[in-house]
Image (cartoon, rainbow, N blue to C red):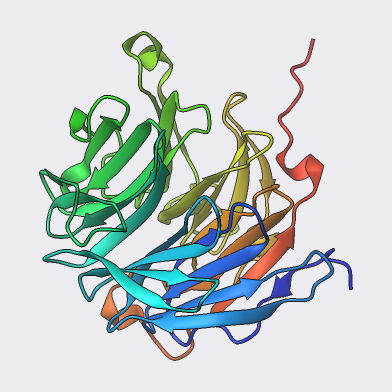
Length: 342
């Protein structure tokens, strides 16, 4: 079977899907869910997919990531802990502890060793050497951590109150930039640019902003609207506004994807400031919100989770809401940057 169409992963979670993460040296996908589980799938370009392992927290899982060697998975949960799953032995170990839910986990490749970073609703960021039970550093945040991303030495954290914190991990584990987001409403996701010159921010207002780190480049900061719909076929008003739930950069071309509560995934060329492709998860509007997404290591596959994203609160969670992960075979023309016209 050729991966020319969408493939739906078997045995999906039974509750909302919160996080997706591909391994860095193999096509394994970790899926975190509100059913307390982390599932690990092997995904093949020939369409042979299977669930290889599952482990659980005591409460819903909010974030998952892999280490650089792709032999360990880390997960953060509402149970206030961070767990490590050893893919070789199948053993699960607690490696992080907070006083509130762990909203984000990220493995950061430091020059001399890898470090696990966890961000929590207890208003702290903690750095962990997984060989020791206590954090090697703790940073107090102005508000609850909602989202976190890092590509050494850049790390960016988005908190409640629209604060965007930037870190230069080569110099210090503490904050060096503390600013209010240019977006006017709650931050949903921050993602570092692959060249580490800046970062993208997505919010609940159907808008994405691009922000540069160096002062001399900040005049090039910009934002754009996305994940919006017309109120009726007769009106071109884009008045129906949906949350931007995830942003992912393509590992080869440097273009990026956004996914949203409108059930679409869209590909963009940031340099040209234009949309490349509306995947609509993928090519037909999804049956529910797209809660999260991820490219594999080569950018040949794009995973998106069609699942309730809690944008309508508890009342919006019904038995009709889908929970599924689909894999899209990425074509070069979908993600390649546009050639400038002469």
